[in-house]
Length: 136
Image 1 (cartoon, rainbow, N blue to C red):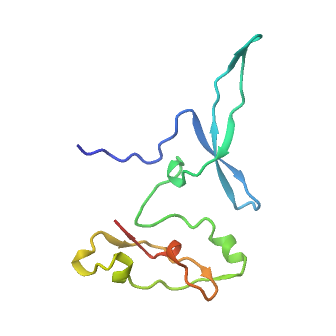
Image 2 (cartoon, rainbow, N blue to C red):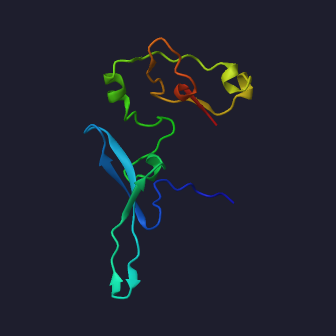
Image 3 (cartoon, rainbow, N blue to C red):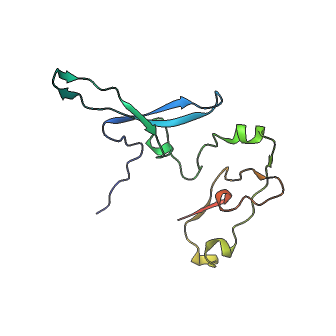
């Protein structure tokens, strides 16, 4: 039985909202959770929604159109580059050690992700967070 993957699903009783960060171009994802009314001695009383930090990523945003071949939109790139402590670099070809020592026909589903090169601290390797291939 194949199950279709559903993108942009909403969590019940909540919605994704954004608050402005330390700069106007930084948006912090929050989850606004609707609360049930409280019932007490004086009857029913409405409760304001609660906002919590949302770590679910862009795929729970109704405005997100995911494409794993393109990778994620580099939302932070502008302010990271503005700090002046990073430099862009050209990615390199995938090597066998990137894929557990496998090479050639043993590597299946390995696809280069467009735009995966990311800035790294000047003079340093970007490390795992800046890998330039997505392997399934």
